[in-house]
Image (cartoon, rainbow, N blue to C red; front, top):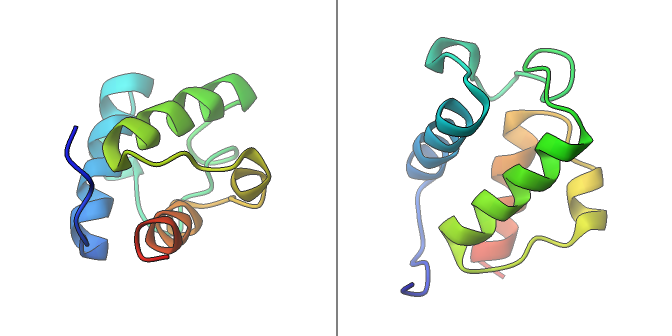
Amino acid sequence: MMEAEMKTREEMFGQLQAILVENFELEPGQISEGADLYEDLDIDSIDAVDLMIGLKDLTGKKIEPEDFKKVRTIGDVLDALDQLLNA
């Protein structure tokens, strides 16, 4: 896979939304920056690992588990991706 070039937040949101819809059977309308992964989207710890793998495939970079533990909302995921891609 090609190295991920700088992506806008909107592009990352779209790709994240696609991963969530495809892998977790969520409706696109449920997914917003303020949506809580665990409470609003009913993602459990095993799902979170699957999401991390999906994001690694998307970015070509590994998200450290301790960084992902701080993530609560879709906006937090986007912030983590932004830091990863623009580090």
